[in-house]
Length: 110
Image: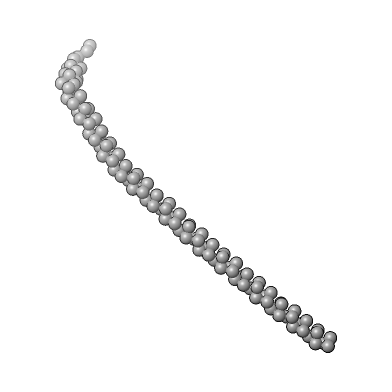
């Protein structure tokens, strides 16, 4: 009888060990599934963040290019105005400058 009892105890231990292995395997699989899900969520968040940063960069780039075009146009207009003022000023004093040159060139000093 003790032999049967011993045999039954061993069977119980083997069954308990197998059940424990199944529980550990199930827990390991659940953990791996959670890690995989967390990794996928993190990758999705990273992709969304990258897309957001890229959109912001492209928007700022477009603004700066637009601003640059506006700045170029504004600077061209300012330059044209300054050139016009310089030409007008030169025309005003052109006669006097020519007369001054002629006076200095034609005057002979001893």
